[in-house]
Image 1: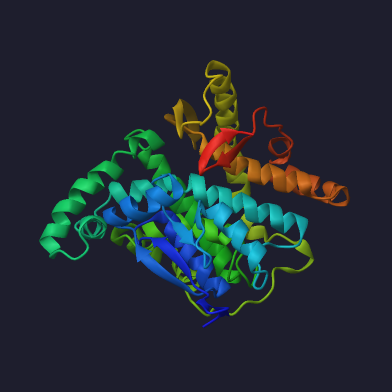
Image 2: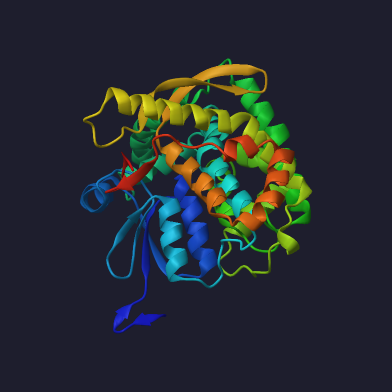
Amino acid sequence: MFQLGIVPFMYTLYGSEVSLYTGKLRAYLRYKQLPFNEVLSTVGVYKKTILPKTGVAFIPVVKTPDGEYLQDTARIIDHLEMLHSERSVVPIGAKQRLVSELFALWGDEWLVIPAMHYRWNKDNFPFIYQEFGRVVSPNSPAFIRAYFGKKLAKKFSGFVPVLGITEHSIPTIENWYENTVLHHLNKHFADHDYLLGGRPCIGDFGLMGPLYAHLYRDPAPGNLMKRIAPNVAAWVERMNQACVTSADYVEHDEIPDTLLPLLKDMFEQQWPVLNSTATALSAWRRSHPKERFIPRSLGEHSFTMGNISEKRFISSFHQYKQQRVLDTYQKISDENNAQLAAFLVEIGGLEHMQMTVEDPVTVEDNKLIFA
């Protein structure tokens, strides 16, 4: 075991197997080969540790060896990359760095739609009740866990409609997930171990959250993935390995052609929603000039998927994640701009990358504020 003086060098991961973002961070810690203990985030752990130490009720949380508590997977990974440069997950090339962040944003915020649909609208019970029951009463008999798990699951399943998952949109969501997302990822992972070649990037870990915790691990979507997209299932299993071999990214900063349909899809469907979110935050700021902290939800707006439109809640945190991508693009040196511009034109993203956020946000005490 690593040692810092006489104190064991050990991280603590507070999370759960059923949690989307815990799956992302667990895979990252394993790939980085950082020693960690995992603590199940029961109701008691929330009350005694997570809320007092972070001020918010979100997992995962990482406790560092020096006793600092970190929240939000994007910021946790940034922090740990600064401390542990070995086995870096940040590509050096300009295009690959940008694509990595695009996939991280897509996985974190957009693939939540099929993840929540396939968990709560498919036959995943009583498995889900047992999983959520462990959060409430981990040491109880199965029938008691199921009782409490069903009550807690009802709370989480209530988020499904606010994500725009309705009877009207479900057929399109399923068609998109199965025939676009899984189809193109399955083709890609037939030729590449990870998104950008022989080692995972931040984008891989962004995908890992929804594709593992909900869409691989839950029985109904897990069986679907293994049947129609076995290469994606194999990628999920590879991402969970503790001692995976690390090779290199694709040479010459190239982006595999198999990713281009998914990148085009991002800019067609997700980015109009992100832009609308930024507009909504600016309007909210003007109408709430004395408010310091920004609520996580700000009313609702429309989104389009395929040939249908539906309403969904406006997530203010989406703008924070969007800013990460825009900052990545804007920090790339001028010598790369011509090459990047041509690539972005090809995938329909140049105009989106050149947008200016009127009212940028930042994080203070794990809560959003205007910068």
